Length: 191
Image (cartoon, rainbow, N blue to C red; front, side):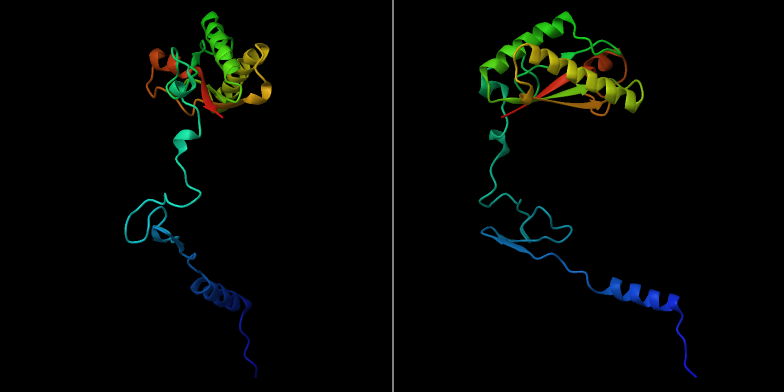
């Protein structure tokens, strides 16, 4: 009499065999600095020495990748991370105030003097409202800024918009002081 093995038993045995074998560690990469581990837990360090993975022909400092305010000759009004200062919006609004348009005039003049620069315009909101609502409002704010700069002669392909809504507050506090700092357009300058 022939003995039958249930199909479920065969499936369990096949899964167990696959789980026990067949997993390989990625090969190690050898550099002038030494052997670098590619195994989990070893990312980012030279094996046995704790050195960062910063040597090699394709690695170069990031500090020269983007523009910084002092490097590009824009002095007063510079933002925290670049030459273009943030501008701020009223509660639940994407309308540009008189102060915002004056600042954008200065930004347009600077962009005109630096024609190789590209800018990402980030739209931000305060913590009130839903995620979806604030993403839409942040997008309206970024687009309002972009439209204004384009109307002042800045090429549209140099300007990219993104909305972070309430997800990346400048001030993590609560209350009108923090909220007013978070309702903004922020400029990230690149080349």
